[in-house]
Length: 210
Image (cartoon, rainbow, N blue to C red):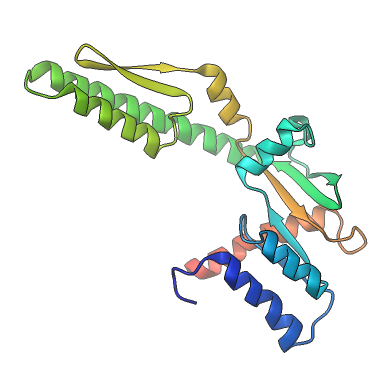
């Protein structure tokens, strides 16, 4: 495929090749987050295949808001929830959680340092435009996805920031957490097997990098 080809069309081909080309049966395809969407799931159903994939962050938060999933289920050991004919395997990786929180803290520290340095420059150079400082700060927050809980405004010629700690905690609640979705029958794969087969995608990604 060309490098700019989206995942959904390539996935439809991936369903057809083993079904039509090889006459395969009882196949489960594993796709990265966002790859197996509605059309892909429909194609799998027609082929009588199954799938394993993962939910996006907004999808997880939507299920949490509907109380279909609970944060307490995200632990180091995979847990499973059945909902409307689908299986959801939940897990929180402590190492990934710590890494994501440390990265966010480091990014915020770097942004603060850049805002402070720019404020000092504006103070020392009267011709410097403070509006440019604000635009720069907003761009940094967007770049590191911090704008959900950090706000910046101009106070005179200086950029000042405020933190919404509740919003920061809300953003961090899913650090290291993921949800795997599958329609595989339990007789074909238990909770741990569904989880492990999805994580095997890391080997595919490693091979592509190599």
